View: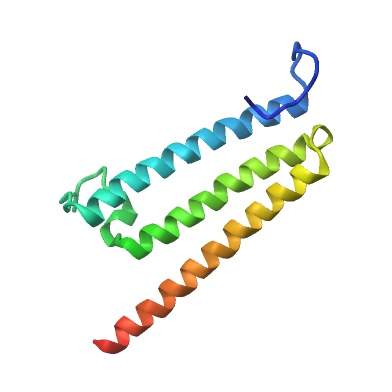
Length: 133
C-alpha cells in the first residue's frame, strides 16, 4: 500500500501516485536501516564486541556506540519514518478525515518531544559522568 486512497483502481500514474511510490520506497529503506542499526548496535552494546576496528565494512557510528547513543539514534530514525508517513498523508490529504490528519500530526509531535527528552537526558547524564571522573 502506498497510502493512496481512491474508490477506483489506479490505471494511470499521476504525479501524486509517483510521489507516494517514491516515499513508500524511502520508508522501506529507512525501516530496514533502523532494523540493522538496532540489531548490530544492540548486539555490540549488550552481547559482545564485534571487533570490526579497521575493517572496511565497519559502520562509523559503531565505534562509539553505547545504550545512550543507540537510544538517540533510534529516536531520530523513528522521527524520520514518522515524517515520511506524515508527508504521505498530507500529499493525499483529500482522502483523509481531519481527525486522522490531526492524530498523525500529534503522534509525530510526540515522537519529536520524546526524542528531545531522550537527547537532553543523555546530555545531562554524560555531563554528570564527566564530572565524576
